[in-house]
Image: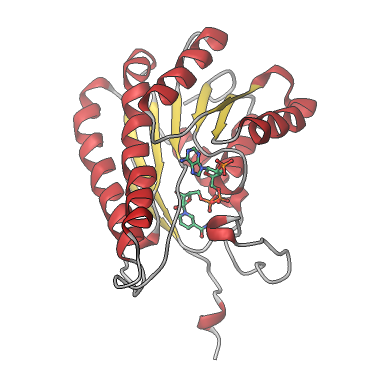
Length: 241
Ligand SMILES: NC(=O)c1ccc[n+]([C@@H]2O[C@H](COP(=O)([O-])OP(=O)(O)OC[C@H]3O[C@@H](n4cnc5c(N)ncnc54)[C@H](OP(=O)(O)O)[C@@H]3O)[C@@H](O)[C@H]2O)c1
């Protein structure tokens, strides 16, 4: 894919991995719309980015759990830029408790955002992506293949997302739409109320590294599709004796 001038929608692009991916694509001359739940946050991030990227950045406030919000984002993007080439279904949350302590509210939120949210973003985008022979990249996790204690909701959502993306890939391949899922290990972000620290998080994957991976996927020759990509920190503290 020639990237300059291509358009992308990044759900959950106000910070963390989504923002890292958005900036990587903007640096390639792509036009990017980011979303997030809070209007003031979306506006603030767009304002900051527009200093460098001018009209190539747009924002839309909405919740991925609402199909109508996702349709509104795609519609606004197409009104401005006429077409949609890439969807990055990234927005996600986590609650990590033993099954005994995990509440129904927490379970529902994780499943709603991480699974139904991705379904909604894809549903809202597929008709447009068919026209451009576009690309959908979902952000799953190594938690989509490795299970752990206190991970019931998050593991279920990410195992589910990996399956969802692979099945969707089979559905959309006949339309020349590519689908991939990226499965990161620890990334230095605000996830689960973490405060990123340059020093303490130095061993972790950085959001811009996932941005680089997205560019690599988009630039892959048309004949080739890395459909499921695992990525992990090379030197986690646990690897040292
Ligand atoms: N950090 C890691 O170690 C790691 C590892 C593997 C996979 N992941 C996955 O990577 C994705 C991004 O997480 P992150 O680490 O970058 O976390 P983050 O720093 O907390 O960012 C999450 C983003 O998602 C948005 N968001 C959350 N819920 C939303 C909703 N219901 N509707 C719309 N936007 C929503 C947030 O925006 P607002 O708060 O402004 O709404 C924010 O932009 C998630 O799917 C996560 O599961 C993270």
